[in-house]
Amino acid sequence: MSNKLLPSNNGILPNGLENMTLNQLINQEGVEIKKKDNITKIKKITPSQALTVEIRTYDEGITVSQSKIVIPEKKKDLHATAKKMKQEGKTQSEIADILGTTQPYISKMLKMKDK
Image (cartoon, rainbow, N blue to C red; front, side):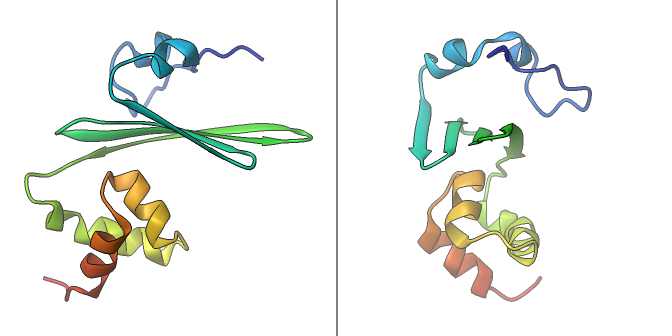
């Protein structure tokens, strides 16, 4: 399998990113890489967005998922998104990782009342 990211028709990744190899992405400034067991996460957070590529390896093959979250001026505006992710079964740590914040902040956000 090639280490080139596949183009996205729905614009999840910013223009040009889908043409990068994973090595090029990894070598960009501000990219964070975490590996635990069979999961490798490549994340880049900018003031306006959080981009994540997650690669899971199995004996039978791999899965690759990508996410892009636009970060509003006030992080508390992510409240509804965090609640939906929690309802989908994601842990607070997973939500924090995707949204580019911390687990304690997600815990606080999930306790907030709906607007």
